Length: 318
Image (cartoon, rainbow, N blue to C red):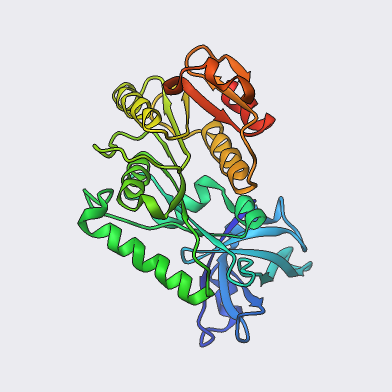
């Protein structure tokens, strides 16, 4: 999905003046918006945007860091000047039906702002399919991945505000993170394990020292050349499985980078869990051997990867 950056504009400044200054004006309409939100966008950004989008396109509007899933409602094009003067959008808020929405927390790389995490991970289609509210903190501090410091209380307050705002019913949380965000996912899970439905981490270098028996499935991935994190992750995952945890482990070529392949596996894994799919097969670490669920015990528990769908099996074994 394409993303277009926008800023809120003051109605004290006339649209003609803004156009002379290199802006395209517009408005965001929506059921939960009183009147409209007047906006302005850079002319060059709009020109690039118009190469792939038109009236009726679904896009992500980055309104000063707030990500809004919108439809392009109207485009006012000046054919004499060969330029777009105004674009109107229609915003549909996340579907929250009778409080049934669930919250997924996405932790970005070290000191990433939340909007960068949302743009990079691209979990928006997953959110629409499963009625998820995506919450992405903009934590900034050397030790923010330790929930015992200050970040744990901050996250809990943010979750409580969402529950109150949308009248949500009690549901466990979903966590996913990369690098420092992967450390958040692992440590926050351990800190509030009874409140977490599933969690995943890529390129994680810090894990909880103690492992509790838990029913929460986990996904761990790491680059082959990210040697220190690879060794740390291996040590943790075997202990997690020994304590009864269902965990998928996948090593990718390369180092510490976050790739499309890593994110594709994560999105598919969460999709399977949220769809309540049952385990159809198991894969074995290192060998890549896959057996049907009925032959589970032919793979030792500490090397066993639970696979829920054909697509997940293919991505894991790729």
